[in-house]
Amino acid sequence: MGNRQVSGTRVVAATPEEIFALLTDPSKHPVLDGSGTVRAAQPGGPAKLELGTKFGMDMKMGASYKILNTVVEYEENRLIAWRHFNGHRWRWQLTPVEGGTEVTETFDWASARIPVLISLSFFPRKNKEGIERTLDRLAGMFPVSSGS
Image (cartoon, rainbow, N blue to C red; front, side, top):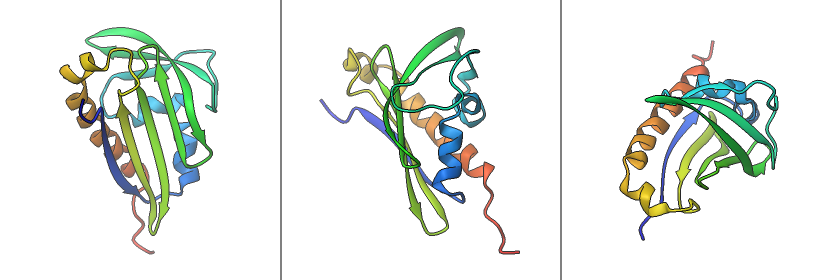
C-alpha cells in the first residue's frame, strides 16, 4: 500500500509551550497555514483545543467551504492531531532540542475512509508543499536571537 503520510520537520527557536499555545488556538491556524487554504476559525468555537474538542474552520481551495475537525491525539506541549469527517489527520509533534523545539507536521491519510483516493490525488504533494511553507512561517514567528 505504501506510506500514506507526508511530513516536514524544522527546528524552531521557541519552547514547546510557546508553539503548542499557537497550535491549540484555532484562531491562530490561518496565521500558521502555509497552504493558503485556512481562512478563519468559525465563530463560537473553542478558544483552546484539547482531546475530543470539535472545532470548525472556514477554508478555501478554489471554492470556500467549512470543515469540522475533532482533536484525536493530545499530549500537552508535545503532540496534537485532528481529523475531519473523511478520517485523515493533521498531526503536530514537538520535541525539545538544543536551541528550541523540533517541530514535525504530518498529513496522515492511512486512517481516511478511502485512502487510495487521496494517494492517487494531488493532495499528498500539495500538502507536503504546504507543510514546508507552514514550518517556514512558524520558524519566522520566532527568529533566532543573535545572543544580544
